[in-house]
Length: 301
Image 1: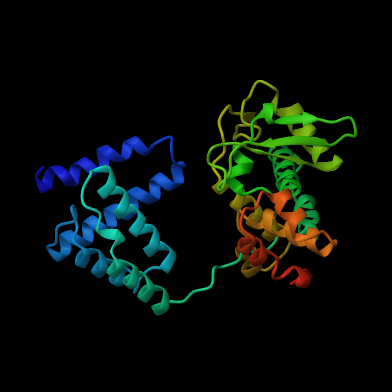
Image 2 (image 1 turned 90 degrees about the vertical axis):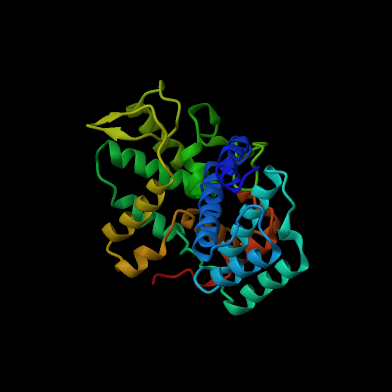
């Protein structure tokens, strides 16, 4: 197989991965392999099959300009291409592992922690929502996301059939797929009565004919289409600004802030980490521990 054909073939082979990986993962794979291919072209090197020395040089060069986590992800992309094309895999050699260790030591970095949208913030954010269809949707999204400890991708992926009303006025919600549950086994979560009422208000406006639980609104009409997960981050940050918080504080919030803040509130209320892990569907204690680091400092900034 000629080099030109190999350089085109990996894109074709990547289509085999669609459906097995999340769309965001696929976008990262394409981006990372294209970065490697472009770098090799600039250096006059062959990307596929790559030599051990080429991979090492690429990783160490990338380590000077991007985060170690990005370097590691790009290594996985290179590995995936070689396996899909049935080429000798240079990425498992010990020299490559040593290069990756050099990158981590060169730029040690602590993961950035999103500011938690704790209940105090939630109350303020709910208060500033407008009295219109967008406000109905935004209130339901904020309250439900907090109660369910959702990631932003999980929140926008909810479907109408995932919601069950309970006799006590709360909701039972099936979260079908998450970052750590790609096979879609799902987890069951529950909400407050307030979230149930806010969602009922939204659905009364939206109607029951739309599949996504939350959808775009165009000229005052609900559109039968999913929101992108970026909408969640914008909603939280804009709510913080409308509530009068400094822009620097608003920008510290992210689409993960509902999940972080709810977990911090649960810890402050006396719940143990095992219960919090079950509530939020965490698989790693290390990740949860990072979320809970600032729980004792949940006061107004």
